[in-house]
Image (tube, rainbow, N blue to C red):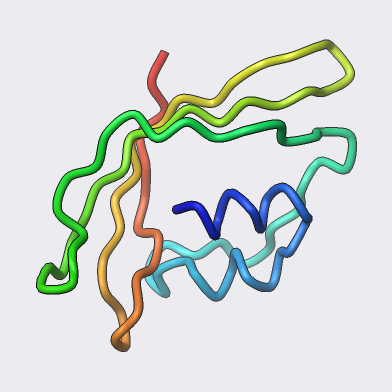
Length: 94
C-alpha cells in the first residue's frame, strides 16, 4: 500500500499498473498533474502477512489540488498474484 501511495505521489503510472491485479487493472491510467499528495495515514490492516493470500488496508490519503486540501478514505483489497502483492479493488468511504 505504501509503495502504491508513493507511486501516486511521484506520478509513477507504470508501477501503479504493474501493482494492479490483471483482472481489475484499467487499460489506461492518467494522474492529475495538479494534485499533490501530502501524506498517508494507515487506519487499519487485516491479514496480508507472509502466509496470507489476501489482505485489506484502510487508509486516508491527504492531498492538495486547485480547490484546496482534501482526502481520500478507502478500504483496499490486495491479493497475491504471481508471488507478489497486487491491488485488487477498493471501496471509497465517505
